[in-house]
Amino acid sequence: MNTQLSYWPAYSANHLEEETGFIEWLWKYRATFANYTGTYFESKGINVPGVTTLVGEPMGGWIQYSFGPTVSAWLAHHFYLHWQYIMDREFLKEKAYPWIKEVAVFLEDISEKDSEGKRKLPISSSPEIHDNSREAWFEKTTNFDLALIRWTYEKAAELAVELGQTEEAATWKSILSEWPELAIDGTCGLMITPDLSYQESHRHFSHQMAYHPLGLIDFSGGASGQKIIANTISTLEKIGTAGWVGYSFSWLANLKARAFDGEGAENALEIFATSFCLPNSFHVNGDQSGKVIVTSLIVHLRWKAILLLRLACRRC
Image 1 (tube, one colour):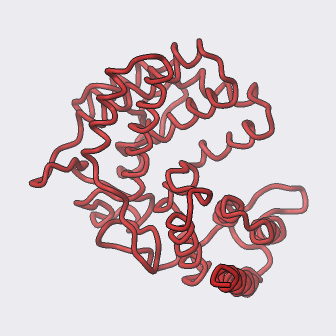
Image 2 (image 1 turned 180 degrees about the vertical axis):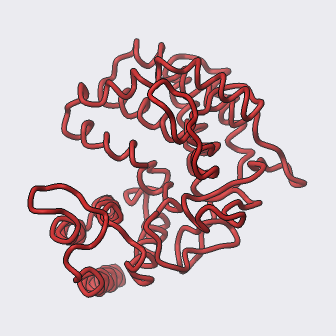
């Protein structure tokens, strides 16, 4: 995430030259990544070490994330965004689709089917849930991994259709249908796994990847998605900010913005700017004001009031 989110502003700011270097770096070392994938996972396709040297070699670290199975899927998001913003068909044909296709091949090869014929990862994790302990691995595929997997096959099919590769598109759609749906609780929203909801304050919101940044759940898609989004955000704020750091608030601002809550997004960014940034603009992960918990409670109560008002208006 530390890399991915750093490049997002280049797209909406229309400064693609600022993120092209990252795409080119990934493409340059794809053979290194493929070798790593074959050596470590004993699989076809491509994955990327979560922590790498400047030449793409794995450096190690917390194994769930430095050797995570969906790193290349999240990086594929940048290839897709670049295509969406530049609409260069040569880039689509020569780089974007080939990268996403290789990720899809890898995820198919590494996955296994359960007794009901549904695919799953052999083991799965969700960034920093249970830290670097044995419990950080889950038997059931987490929403974090599952969102990236479902996104990969959805976009692989979409880009295959765009290139006229109808048979390949049908293959990706078929594999997508073999993966389970996201784990969603009717009250709490998006869960961490089908057996674990978001229960304690945590700086990572990766259980809701399907909403942001991947957009598999879209506020503009109707009432069902809006309810999931509202419950997910409400749960984050109700449990509180004790475990949050600076980027948690910038991430929250994105969640609010995608829910068309401009005031909520502004409030989250104000907390970020006043509590997690020094006067010289440098970001420091810890709260520098001592006011975050109180301010966040006020923001949460405001969000709840807005939500109740919207529901009341809908009934009218």
